[in-house]
Length: 377
Image (cartoon, rainbow, N blue to C red; front, side, top):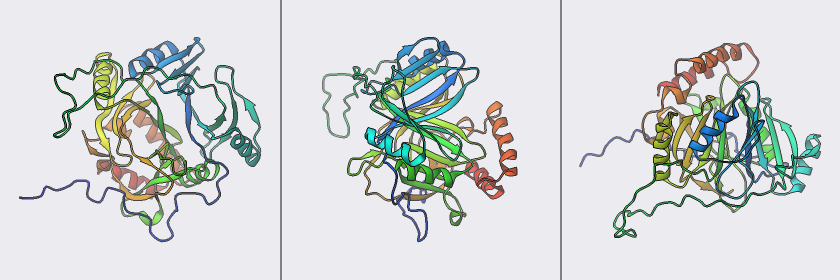
């Protein structure tokens, strides 16, 4: 029997580092962040933002006309905070410290004050800035909201196993209930500085590095980094950093119960007139099932399920970056997802390219050629 060609040969990242390459972790980090706490945005129309949030599967817990807090079904703090502003913009991530002492240690190491968070959240915060200029918060002792009734995974007859007998599957065409915030992806013109900042200050560790094919000797251009919880497994990536011509938000991801919830929830979003960017498929780095959508303000948001979990013993993998290497199966990555769809988004990116090439940063002509090659492969 002839064996079919595997288009992903050479794209998986089980291969490790070469001598002298980045180790993927700091030798003596200041603290070790426990998880992402929430993401903060500004948007001009909170009513429109709330309508999409409900369709996407969030539960609003605070809606004042000036501020909107969105949560998942897991216990904890809200996972998205939106304030009313003159324009739509991403303000930054907040990370949860393992203990209040870590917030105090980080404040002392960086020379930043510790402040009380608003009463609606509780707890304390130290406000930092990464090398890209992004506002990064580290919090502790926030008030935990109780769990909500979850959307339970469906029972499947897999292979010869038949746990579901005399019963049918009828997943409702309804919002896929968000369980929790999973990760945020950020683009930076100062990739190496920014990566090392997160590894040193927040104790994060790299799960996978990607590099431009043929230019591995220049170092990686993307990293998927996770929280270091020791022997307790953590998400394959809590933050992903990629080198690009502008410092910006790329997307954020929110866990749902399973593939049926994702697919039926996607049908609900489509019927409500929302725009799918790319999906459904399964990623390579992280392995998660994915489905990407654009909210009314143009932000890219992802439903995901069934992602990898790594403990602190695993060293980083290394792989070349390519558009086809983004997924094991599913439709090809779209122009919208890659940021090359004709329109305002691609024009902004083009202007950013010309600006970045004139400035002193890590995005140079060779990196631009590598990025263009990625989009074509």
